[in-house]
Image 1 (cartoon, rainbow over the protein chains, first blue to last red):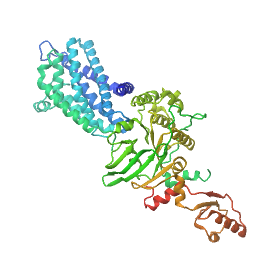
Image 2: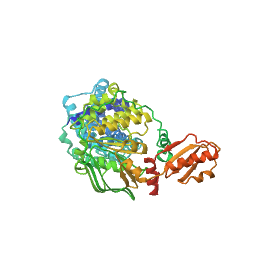
Image 3: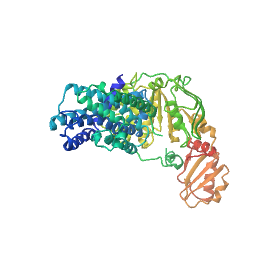
Image 4: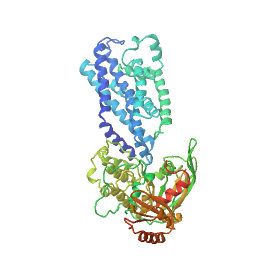
Length: 249
Length: 351
């Protein structure tokens, strides 16, 4: 147990010293919020009395789950492997579950920090309506999503061997999800064919769930989404464990 | 030492692997005592590593071809061989980094396949390349690795021994090569291991740093630990190891103490002297025990099967022809010769 805690605090320090990651995770969602919010933020949303900004805030919070997983966790794992650090760990009694757990916790901290920031900017600029219940449910939603999406990031790290290739792959996954899952713009604006595709993307259900609970709906209203996310999580966790490699070759 | 330094320049062994060391690896001038561990009696009769027909194949290439050997408690066991001979694969199988295709590897009486975690608790490993996160501080790395083990050595003591006390807050990436190697060595001892594996420990270190490294390794042995070391440097194998296994094409082609291997070779001895210009190549043919002559513009080297007789004849010849034997050097056969002879016999040599 001591090894787990030590590894988590060790990795936390390394993450905090990595300015590029911090910049990406903390600046990018706020930039997205400011850009899309200033274009459509004050337009009325589909629920009575709501504005688009009320949809952007939760969507960007869960977008961070995806960007942290496919970029940060994926590339960090590959860097650890490529530089031989995982290989050095492998000749010690530490287990791969400790390595994955520690990086998952770093990812979760980054996602929560990003979410807090998005909510605060939303409050300051658009004076969004915030309730404690909405925040708790959103955090719950983030935790649920982290299982599947973080595993996706770890699974991706098993597919490529260099950080360059990894970021290429990450972009190929991130940007379609960004536009097709209703984060950047409401799905109604998309052509019919795109809407059909979006139904096959787990992120779409995740964004819908986050936006719903932020509006004060119960999670139970999103049974189909939860099932999709559960299946997605099972598949990704299996892939992550199966594709985990201690060293390149 | 004069003729020994020639080995350093031997292109066959070093190829492109020689790189100038960036940092002298100097421990404190005072005698170092590794006190963080209770001395255990060395007992070569106790086998700590036992390999039985270990085999590993990558595609069509057989990296380790049915190796069986035993390593006793408290010995420095050297594994030498040309590049690609399979020595790294072999050491990685014993460390648990790689699974053998067949055969059995027992480490401290435990099967490395089944009890890898228990074995890893009791071994220390120095890998060939340093692999520590660059943005971690020395004390953080030491603390982290210590937490991985049930039993640890005293970190302060280890830091003191390796002169890391005032480097505790330095980022690993800011350390020079020699200091990185010290941190790596400290990490490999942090669990007070019974067996220490060192893969090419003096690679890239300058000669001074290398002899410091040797002194450390010998002290570790004197404390009753078993050391398994792979090396390219025959000089290192000869000076350091109690026993040496020469590996080529995945097989052990010789295994004994360096002295016995050299004696077994029954080899020739070298006599070299300056080529002063007044010596005629043809006249050297009267030297009866000389089997080979290396004739170079500045240096003549004779390979003799009987040193005494050849020297006698050489000085006689010089007196007869009225020239002087200048810059005379005698060379005993070395591990270098053993290595060259055995690996060339195998028709493989250094790739």
